[in-house]
Length: 494
Image (cartoon, rainbow, N blue to C red):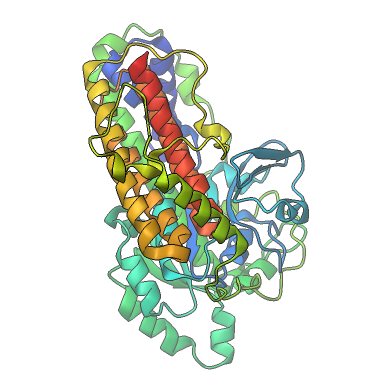
């Protein structure tokens, strides 16, 4: 039996098992997660320095000129959808939905994150996350780690894999490195300048132990190899490096799916006795797959394409960061945070009373800053918490209050530079809360599940705000952290 037919059978049987409700409660959630992995496309992330060719590579992978040359967008998630649609997350956490994909209109909204749905066949196999960050090593480092948690395959785009890139990539999780490719872009330019062999040799020497594979690609040539009628000039695609990339990505896609199939198959065998009650439906497992087989190599890029003439250059590089200066928004954020730091009557909630009030200033309620909708406190009262969840909540609340003193100290120490420092600290604090809540408490507690979701939403927003480097974002980030605090206190008091 081929891997593909095995995968179809296992997925069909797992779907029936999940719907039957016969799994023990402790297994049902794991089965649902595996089923989701089998049903959803593999998540692929495009990482790298500004101007490294990520947007052009995205266009190649998807098989369409999604991002036109010269248009700058923030971090972008591209997924499959029956109809084109764009969901833009704005800096205040609100979302604007456009029932069409007009890139210029999207850019005009100045969003911090965009999800685009398009009916391209390639997106049935992969979703693509293009990570955009300022030309700052720390920002790119944070953005890359953020993306690593939201992807199964990573492509690091580079023109030479310099020391800065090596330092950033060196800190990535081993699991990410195992499923990552170092993509040397603009291979056509390197060949024209006589630099190709030397560049590829140097990159392979520096990156060979850090990636699954090092590949080179002339992306614009690869795009041009796909004709408007959907056919492909196979020789041109191969010479550009596009065929090697497609093959490598498809291999990782199939590998990721096979891992989920194997785990699901083991799960089904472990509980075969109780699942034997399910009526056999042989027809379901024998159905031919609706999607093309992985061996149809150009499936990632060729199908469903009406590709306009390929751009002649990669998307315009993001500009170098401006010199640090104290802008009005920064002054406003600093003055408001100083006002908060002077207040001594922080939280009066009986669920928590700090021991030393003089260090708790930034924990004061900041009602003047609206929190994003994703972090709003629930309207309905929370259920009674289990002891394990209650203990976890108390620990997180204590952590938030203790971190308040750090924020106050940063305010006094960094003065006009406080917003950037506070943003970085808040991002770390919110991520710690996510990690702690994800590993503590009672997994069966619905309140904990809801708070975990809220914490992860807040972490996403803070990371995106941090990438944007807006001066006013520091106060908004602190507000997000406090919103989680209020949600915990509400649950504890219920």
